[in-house]
Length: 143
Image 1: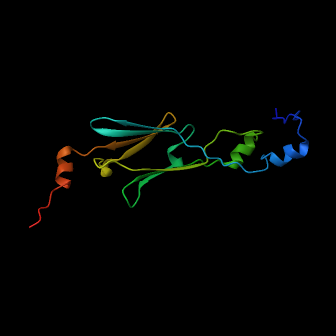
Image 2: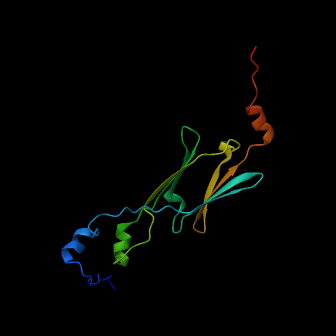
Image 3: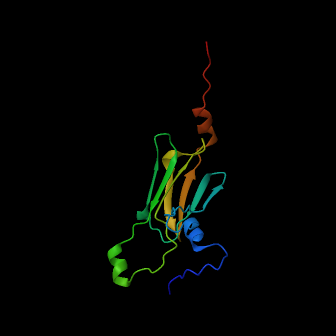
């Protein structure tokens, strides 16, 4: 089944419809996955909707500013797809996504862990203990 364009039965001439029709313009394929952030006394938990994604589709790292960067790119094997058939219409898919998250000060950047489970990327961001944060914020007295 193919989508069909219906005849436009308006009073305006077709030239106006053709002029204002933007079907010839490429539409951006921007899709942002939903993100949840849960805070507990011990950690932050980031959940990113990633249906159909595997761990190979992700690149997660800390940038030079210490911010969490999540890159997601779905790589489609065109040969396997052609063996099974081809899409006549394809509206849902992630192609490429990047998100930078500013981390709270109390995040233990050395202990961040991530996994993909049931179509959700889960990033665990443990908190440093309050005593360690207080030590890091040592006040320097001016003499």
